Length: 425
Image (cartoon, rainbow, N blue to C red):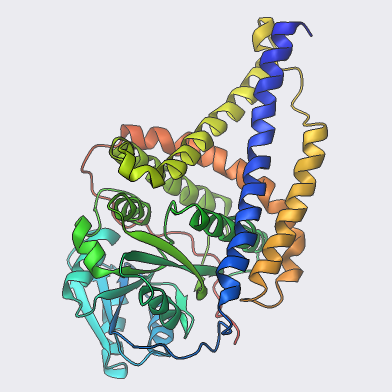
């Protein structure tokens, strides 16, 4: 291998393998620091918190589209919230199944429930906007129509708002509900060893890429300040997160606010979900990147840089694979020749890092969910799968964001919800 080949190929492959290595340790150190700086300051167990100094009224918003199979359980869990002053507003957004009829019937059983019916498929953002404008509270808890909110989750979310007047949103802690299939099991690892660590680490440097749209609480005054949710982004949660933080509202992570969610359990369903997430992230970045250049918005720069580097890394990995494959069939110039995809020493380090990352996440999340150790085998392998899925989603999602028509409304698309079961007490 000559000098030119060595320089280009080695530098390219070093970036491909060292970037996820660097991010893994960044997330781990951030997660551990968060645990000892914030989580350990709270001595209350997540399932039996102490009293709050006050209990401001809360409105729980539940946008629904074709949730006939799930809405009864969702509303039942909401009605069981251990919080003294709350209402539930369910927005039936043009469902074509029996969601509307079920919700109307549930109003007789749960007096705190109000139901709003929208004609046609308007999209989640529009449904949330309608619910927010109808609410009587300044704290809005938003969950998906197939999610099950832990009975103390509202308590923990409100607790955050009482500590800071500039708090715009608090994202909760999604936990996987369907775990009978292989994809279900490995996503338990993702939400612990990847997503949970990322949110903890991002909280350390002051900004969070996105709240979890499936469980999040908002300061209504902050939403009013930014104009509520936009209806033309396929991921309204990423969009609202960036706009809140660009307008100097804080966003926090509350790991005690548990919410049991359904995830895709087919490869096609998982791919569609992740491509949509990638497209939504790209749409948000392209729309707001120019607005974060002023110095007063510098706290968003790390989030922006992290996103840019992750996209560059995804395309770099694809380029590396393409050059290696082409080199098997045609003679490439020395500067473009990739001799091998074998990671060698970096592969060993990546494997050990995945093991360590999974162990760290187990320690952090064992506070909120017992029995995670039995998923350790799947958690060990998921960080590697995460990067592969991330590449596929980014490479497809970013061009879709570039080609999307401005102002085109994002409407509901029923996802793959996997094999459903209720969480055990």
